[in-house]
Length: 280
Image (cartoon, rainbow, N blue to C red; front, side, top):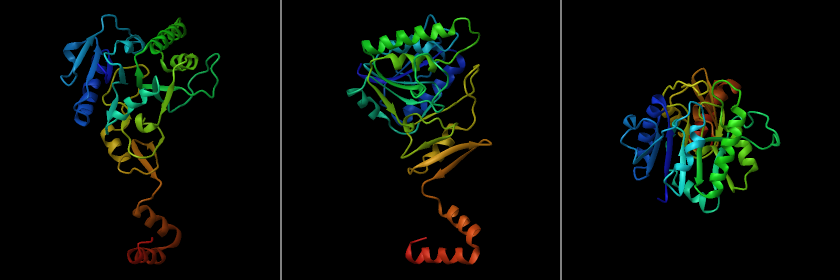
């Protein structure tokens, strides 16, 4: 099969979240073929076009590493379960005409010191991975798994997989394209976007995880608020409320700013002038 979307969900909480994510995806892109790799087929939503069963699921973060190569597609867009698709993203598949893999940078950029990896080489966020399932990618997965298991030895609890990926991709010869935040917008963290965001990334349901994020803001409301504008804008979560600072301030903001700086009469004068000359 040429192209499609892949989810990997292990455990009831993550399957429930994947079900919600694929429902949103299918509403936006109904003809997209979607596969779920899971350990519980009976819990999967009927929006998945294909389901593959995991017989050897892990109790750590390695399920993604172990099963990405099981994609049925030549060209795959992999999603973590906490993905909210707000716009068609089919152009991502076109990147694979020239590149082997594409990801966005992790919001934190740098998470851990790793031997032989310079600090200037940013961590990638593995919640959205666009890839060709070729021999080079499978070699990357093998090295990623090796590094992850080496680092996990002797550690207790779950361990993030992104630092291990950072080292593996740094050593790799794959052609890597860097996605902009519009294709992996971590809306619960401070960020910057321009134009419409196509893929939002943040909890859709509560999951039981030692290191996973909790719901800090509703994904649908965040998408509506951030995509209300398409100009350059910064977003920031404060006290449970998403704040947006836009390149083009609203009329309300400009009126209040003028009132604060200049007083009521000058501000009213500017408003009247705006109505007459369309220049506020």
